[in-house]
Length: 141
Image (cartoon, rainbow, N blue to C red; front, side, top):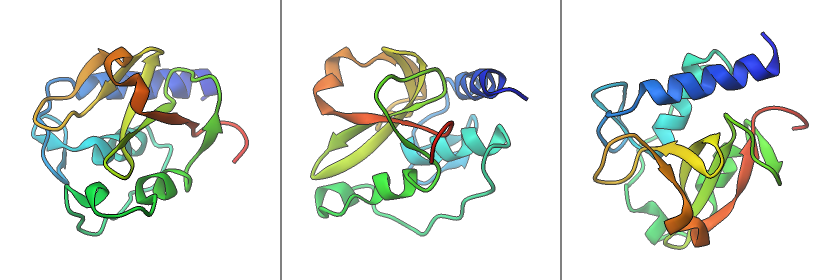
């Protein structure tokens, strides 16, 4: 599968989660995911990463820690890029650290699992001031 086909597959899988409710640490399409498990589930289903086991984490960890835990996990699978392409990840700061991720459909349109919401496409204009960067699975790691 080419990189463009892989990217398209990631976008299609992400969109198939539309309507899945937010559920802290959930990992079931249609039943519940959070913003981190959503990313993991999509990339696992696309066959790009092996199954990722997660230790329990508080849904407010980012409010009490300055260590970039979300970013460090993300960097295991990708690297920072300046210009996002479909399938890349946008990372946002909430609280003290980067704590929310979304999958790029066609920037600025992304898809994410918002707290107290459902997986949905959105334009990041209202939260762009929280953007900490874009990360890609593809390319130099």
